[in-house]
Amino acid sequence: MSATGQTFKPYAAVFLSRTIYSNDVSSHNSYGVRGGMYYALDRSAYIGAGLVHERQESCDRTVMTDCNETRPEVTLHFRF
Image (cartoon, rainbow, N blue to C red; front, side, top):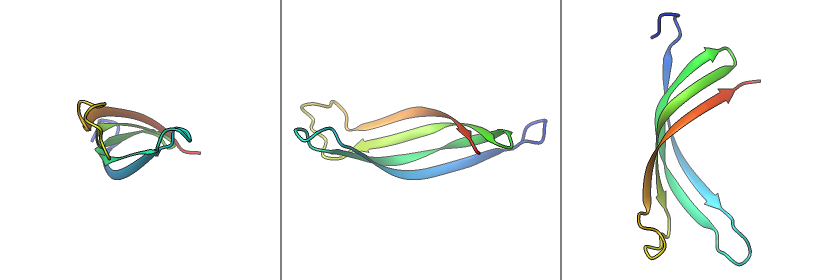
């Protein structure tokens, strides 16, 4: 908890991503997990920080050196 009474809220999610390139190139799928913490800036804005781990489906090792990726995530969300 911060000095102003605001709290950090944890988040976790599972996701599936599908990328459609064109008629000549087949679609690409990936899936993964993400997790971290959100902090309320005010009643309608939140900032978050965490980690994402993503795995490429049908990964071609001749094209990609690694089929897994872990990266940081920083987000800013607004509610209307």
